[in-house]
Each structure stands twice: as structure tokens, then as C-alpha cells.
Amino acid sequence: MKNLIIRLLANAVALAVASWIVGGITLQGATTGQRVLTLLIVAAIFGLVNAIVKPVVKVLSFPLLILTLGLLTFVINAVMLWLTSWITGKLDVQFHVDGFWSALFGALIISIVGMLINAVLPEKAEVR
Image 1 (cartoon, rainbow, N blue to C red):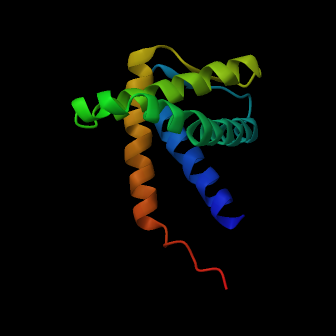
Image 2: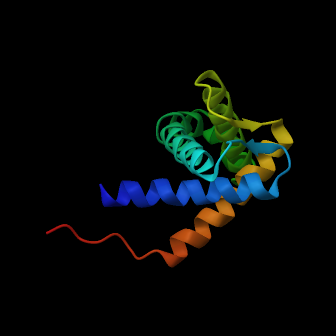
């Protein structure tokens, strides 16, 4: 449970940085508390999309992943961010990605921030 919360917070931080840097990613809320709540909801949806949809897409695109030497992974990550934006739009959550290029740059930022956060966080603790 602790690892799930840490992963949720890491995704929220990465999404916040992406919405701050990339102009086509918007996160709205009247107060800071509402924006934080929106970030946590979006991070949870993004985590679910990455856990459920992304593996299926990667398996189906495996030959293209090999052909592009893994560069298609950036496009897959962008599509997952775009899908998250579509889902949050249906749920009336104030998060929006304007287009493919914004999603691609946002996915790149999220990947870099996530990698940095994972480098700082301690390894998963052993369960006894």
C-alpha cells in the first residue's frame, strides 16, 4: 500500500512538472487544494491507464518497437497521456492535453521526472 501511495505521488509530481513546462497541458482549479486534488485524481487515472492499457499496446506493437529500436515507446507514452486526458474530460476533471505534440513533450517530461524521482527514492523494502 505504501508503494502505491509513493507511486501515486511521484506520478502527481511528474504530471505537475509537465503541466508547468508544456504549454499544451493544462491543469485547472480555483484553489491550490483543488489543483492538488485534480493532480492526484489524474495521477491515479494515469497509473491505471499505464497498468492496464499500456502493456496491451506494447505487446501489440512489439514488432514496431523492435524495428524502431524502442523509440516507439515515446509515442506509446504520449498516447497514454492523451488517453488520460480524454478519460479525465469524460469524468469532468480539469486536466487537458491539447494535441499529439503536447502529449509527446509531456510524456518525455513525465519520463524524465519519473526517472529522477525513482533515482532518489529508496528501493522497495522487503516484506517480512
